[in-house]
Amino acid sequence: MIDADGLEQTTKYSDSFLAHGFEVVMYRNDLDLRIRYEEKIRSASEKIAVIAAPDVYIPYDMQKCMKKYVVSLSELFPKLNAAAIKGYDCHTYDLICSAYKDNYDVLNTYDATKEFITKRTFSQKNVCFYLNDRLKNIISRAELCKDYREWFSIAEEKARIDTTAIKYDAEIDTSDINFLFRDYILEYYSKLSSVMNTHSPVLVSKAMEYMRDQSERFVIIVMDGMSEFDWMILSESFKDINYQKTSAFAMIPTVTSVSRQCLLSNKFPIKLENPWGQSKEKQEFVKCALSMGFNDNQISYQRGYDADFGHVIRCGAVIINDIDDMVHGQKQGRMGMFSDVSILAKQGKLAEMTKRLVSKGFDVYITADHGNTPRQGMGKFMSSGVETETKSRCMVVLKEIADKDTIKEKYNMIDFPKTYLPKEFDYLICDVGTSLDAKGEDVMSHGGISIDECIVPFIKIKAVDNNG
Image (cartoon, rainbow, N blue to C red; front, side, top):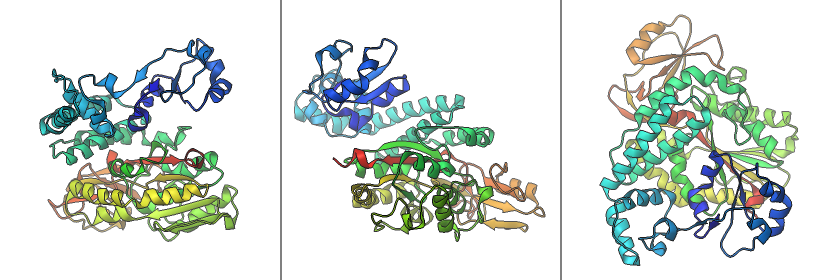
């Protein structure tokens, strides 16, 4: 593939090759290609996709073993002006594709193409048509989905639909996906602990183990409360950073004390010293790092964007609370989160910290302990027999004396299985879209089992890929 306009970096079209069983090779030079991949390229049984920039030298004998294709904006949109299209993000390219299907005019001047993008591509009619089409597609996938990897893809696509809808003021309701995901979680969540994946930890409780296997020297940045929706916005500030993005499942209940401690300790909730408080969080992280072979002076746990690590440190953690603070103080729902996280992205603090750490030779991993989602209050919780509540107001931990059935019915709650949790308590979690806030109150929160809360981004930034 000759990538004439750098579309791989913008659109990640290589994912389609990966999905069809290809090994994707980003071309560096002819010697690297010959040494590492010549045997595979010449083999009739191997599926290799080589992506190269234009005007690079590829040995003729190896070219003869492959089919050559040119990927360019002018090839994709022959009726439009390529220069006027170049530079947009992949979501805009999707919208252009949607509008282009009904375009029968030759608009190959720069001004004509710009007018087409402004008036037709970004029109509310085109945006709504495109998003509803995408929504139907992922709902049909979700109805049959039993594979966690497919749910990762669905979560990312849902986030793209939600962010695009807000950006262009389109009325799109993606909540049906949360109900389908709820049913998946109740049946399959308990089985995820036995699944292995070389591309990311499946559960955040395996993140430390995964990073230790991947990197000799690393920092994990935990963006408290960051959902796929939030990363979709923040990633705009990472355009000049080479990274790989996958996802992971938060621990349930998706509250900070449980899921973040599991993330930093490599433990399930049942093994935590105090799953309902955060006083032991740093201690859990240090114990985990020590058990993985790091020395005391090689481990550091810090907070905030100014976090810095000396040359001795080999295992670091940084906690950033910005997004979770936005969630719990949010008065404008998803629209407010879009606005607030957009400002955070423009400030570039996360990207700048990442660059600083990478320049010091650290591999950087960015993830979250849980996401967040819109909810409506079912009434404030008042009952005896409660072991603990959380500020998320989406779950309660009950002692045996509690009247569980009455609470379930009154507050529309789910009796959650004790998967990975201490067995001496019962766990009730609010159903999708509801919370224990004042009746009728619209809030942003977390703690439940919606796809927005449970599937979080997992970003890998390797020093070797970003340091020349």
